[in-house]
Each structure stands twice: as structure tokens, then as C-alpha cells.
Length: 395
Image (cartoon, rainbow, N blue to C red):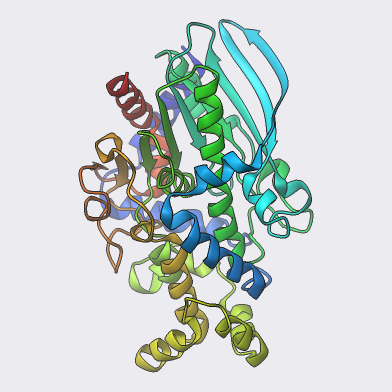
């Protein structure tokens, strides 16, 4: 039995015994979040106003115009392949390159953050389809994606490139505790950086003779794959797993109080509230061109009374993570979102726009009776199947 098939079997025998109803799947999501109670998000502050100013301008002038690839071409980024080996018919490469986003905005990705590390598992046969897999929350190494995706796809003749996210793995800032992003802006920097890095990897893979190309990931990795696809200037397959069209409900709704997003309680809202009440900080945010976040925050808070920090979080998540604010992929028929019916992390209602509305022509596959955690444990065979089907359609 291959490693990927063994992983599927272990997951199925474990999960099958506990899956019976949607409520069980929901409970598993909540229990998992409680088990990670010490893993807080945004432990320092909102982030520097200058970072937001740069992100807004980059979104307006580059990302919303599908110009990331054009910017990369002007930067002359060098690919560094550090290690190559062939084992059991598999070509394994380790490499890195300087993130194009770090070249454009060095203060956003200083030190170790600027180097995009990746590992590829490629069939040692005439070059064919490749899927770039982005890491989900807490995935600091390659092993989960190797066992969950790469090994099984190799059996179908499909190669994989596993990219490390900024703020994770070799790119984790020394002061950061595990996956606990220190600033709210770090999440948006991560997204903008991954868009540029995926576009560069796609261009490099095509230049090396590989193709067709797909983008995929689970949870946060799935959302980042969707975001990256908005700026690719050629048709690519897009298979986001357990993600949706915006991250806003995930980070702003309280599941245990309202049966909504399981990540809300992981956020240090008390600390964020103190900073958002600082008049000097608000003045700097108010000076950013083309946005009116501070006035909108006050208006929302007057209407709902949920606090300035909560309302600012909603505004920023809508601004930077809503796919409706970015271009539609070149060929949406190559896009398939795989979702869990009872996902307590990724919410498909409560203000989130439907995927078919944002990307007309794509399709959504729902895993029945599954929550976020159970779908992750149980669903990799389906994830790989959709990736393989998509790439074969593109040949």
C-alpha cells in the first residue's frame, strides 16, 4: 500500500466511526479549536499604517488589474535549485527564489520572509501536468502535502510543487509563536506575496516544459490558491479545498455563541480594540488614499454596537480577502471548489458571496456530513481526484 493510500485508509477508519450527523462534524471543529486555545492570532496589533497604504495601492494598481505577472517580468527574479535527486522514478527538487513581492516592498517581507522556499515531486518521465499546493493554517513543513497530495498524484503521473507560505516554516519570523500571526496586516501581506510567488512558479514551470498547471490548497491554502489564480494570465486549474470567496466570516463570527466561525475566539480582540481607539493610529489610517475605513468603522459600530475592533476586522477582511474585488480567472470552467457541508471554520453564508456568482462557470462539490476537520482527514482522495481530472481536461 502506498503512503498516500495508507493515509487515506487511516483517516477513513478513524473518521468513519465518529461521523454520523452534521452536528458531530461541527462538534469536532469546535473541539479542535478549543484544543488550540494557546494558538492565538494577531497577537500584537493591526500592523503599520504604511503597510496598509502599500497594500491598498498594490491592490488597486496591480492585483485588481491582473498586472502581477507583468510586474514580475520587469524584476528579473532568479530561480535557485539547491538540491536534486531521483529516487524510485521520482525527481525531487528543493529550491528557493526571492519573492517578487519582497523586491517591490522589502519592509513587508524582511529577513527570512523574503525567500520563497519550495519542494517539487515530479514524475521522471516526459514532462506533464503539475499542481502547485499552498499550505493551510499550521502547515510549516512539506510532509502533510507530500502525503496528502504529492505521493498520490505521482501515481497518476501528476507532479506537485509545494510552496512555503510567508510567515511559515523557513519563513517564520523569529519572534512569531508557531502559526500565530502577530499583526492583522501579516495575513494580507501573505496573500499578496503568494499571488506573486505562484505566478512566478507557474512561469518557471512552463519554461521548464511542464504543463498544464493547476493551483490547489486546503483551508487557508485553498483561499490563497484562489487569490493567486486571479492574476494568472493563462488558463490554470484551480481546486480550492475547504475555502470560500472571503475570509471575513471566518475571522469575525463567534461559532460557540452564534453557531458561526470557529476562528473568532482565537483573535486577541481586546488588544486590537486598544490600538484602534488610539487617535494617532486612526489619523494615519484615515490618511490612506482611496479607502474610508475609519469613517465606515464608526458608522458600522453606531449601527450594531459590536465594537470598533470587530467592525474594522470586517472592513479589512472584505477589502483584502473578498474574491469579488479581484479579476476572474481566465477559464472558470477549470475551477472546482470542494467544501464541507457542516464547516464551522469556513462559512458560506452570513454575507459571503456564492462562488458561482463571483466566478460564473465554476462548480462547487460538497462533502456531505463533513465538518472542516473531518473533511481534511477524510477528503484527500477526493481532492486528488479533482486535481487529476482538471489537469487531464486541460491536456
